Image (tube, rainbow, N blue to C red):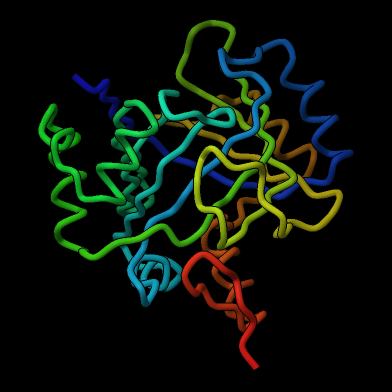
Length: 244
């Protein structure tokens, strides 16, 4: 039986300098602490159609959009636990469905159309439907980044994450592979995300105001896709080739 999880929350993004990040960390110290993952290197493999239908739709900023990926919080092995995640966004609210299962089972399900793990739960049935609806899907981008994650000291559901060294590639699309090679974030920049089911705490609003931080729109997969298009790169078999 796969472990399933469901999240419904708002996700607000802010682009910081490394200096701003350090000041924010000092300001949130009395309220936040590292979560159970703490500092990790997150690896993701995104799935899409041959024409990148999902990400092309997403960057058009529609009212509703969705993505599919598998994720690990360390370099995976065949039996390592990974997360198959279906992420939807509607009217500013993020709905994430995810199933935890061994890496080899996740790959068998998503890449080899082995459906034996697709009916263990309601969430896996949703993912199964997504796979069939958009079929055929394939791995398109490997995306990795360093993350620091913080949760509330009082046990609330408000979370803050800081991501840097965001990199991608289109070859070796496996969670067992090393980190990506192509940076998509300017040196000295950090992506901060605020995740909450309701309003932002007043003390955090004061921090944003004092640092003059304003919400931005930034999609890691969308930025990687833009870099692929800008560089006229295309995926052929297991190799990344540049068109002439």
